[in-house]
Image (cartoon, rainbow, N blue to C red):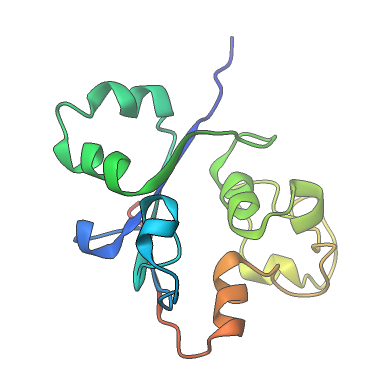
Length: 159
């Protein structure tokens, strides 16, 4: 019997976090915070935290023991129902979340992928080019960076 890999994503204003997986500066909206739920579009900075392999139900059950997570739920945008793509391994799933493409589109189908695989000299069972063109698929961060070249993006991965 197998298991289903689950992911949790939480988007919170940056001042709630000391460390995060991804941190990006986002321009302030001219609209008031009261006209949008939880101040949507008004934060100067945002932090996206992605937890690999932690199911949303488990996180919900421990919020009493970890008040910082409870504060994320109360003051940020979040989902505890993000679904994995097949195959359920980290590489393909993170690439799908960050690019909006499925495995057949982005070409990352295992954890052995590296940037050179996006532009392989020859195709093997371990490297296929993405259908988005030669090179790396665009991510949510590259799209935001294209809109604002002065944007600062940081990526921290533990493990």
